[in-house]
Length: 129
Figure 1 (cartoon, rainbow, N blue to C red):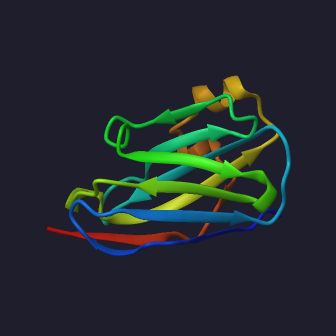
Figure 2 (cartoon, helix red, strand yellow):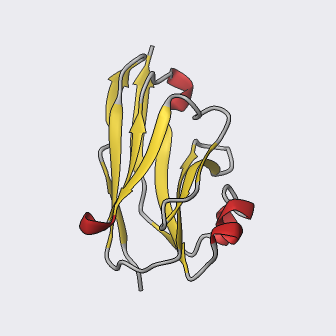
């Protein structure tokens, strides 16, 4: 069982920045890792996805150019840097992992929440205008 623990959420003003962290309990190769977000009444949507080998990084249209996904395998941690935040970025942010897959599978399912096996508990990000 892989445990994921997010941290780093909080309240900021528009234009501000936050760095979210997701610490996972077990390191393995060939892992697809991603960040999703969800607001009340809406489906969980993909924000950014990366593969354990570092050869894949994908962003949703709304996150490209403002958010950065990265990983530190030595620390068993996935990050999401949020810059130029907007009020519409307010949401609960979740990290997710699915091990034992290929990079091609990760690309094809990069924002498919059904393809991710393990999820964190979420961290709240609130952006005020």
